[in-house]
Image (spheres, rainbow, N blue to C red):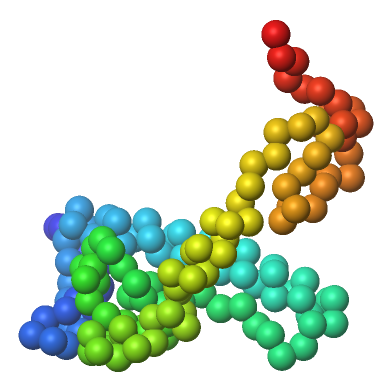
Length: 144
């Protein structure tokens, strides 16, 4: 008896629930476990936000169909909650969900390497101490 896995797969422009042989659905099974792990991390972040008095913000994972480049949803357009979209709607809204060209340019502009011992880049908080109890300024790698 072949084991199967239930998936909503695209068919004629609609999502249709189908039983897929486990050997063909293995990536989706593994992705399920990855999503569960990510959800646990998001839940911890939300608890931390709440504990620190941040109200009105809740982090959420996008639906597994959102912005896929591999698997059964690759190349298809879905919004962050998993609803199908037209290409025109996707293009109109994608920059509000994903980093835009301007966002990428800004991040690239602040990503300046810092190589001096005891210094960190301006966008990173310095650690409270170094590795193995050494001072933060410790020269871990000596130049020859």
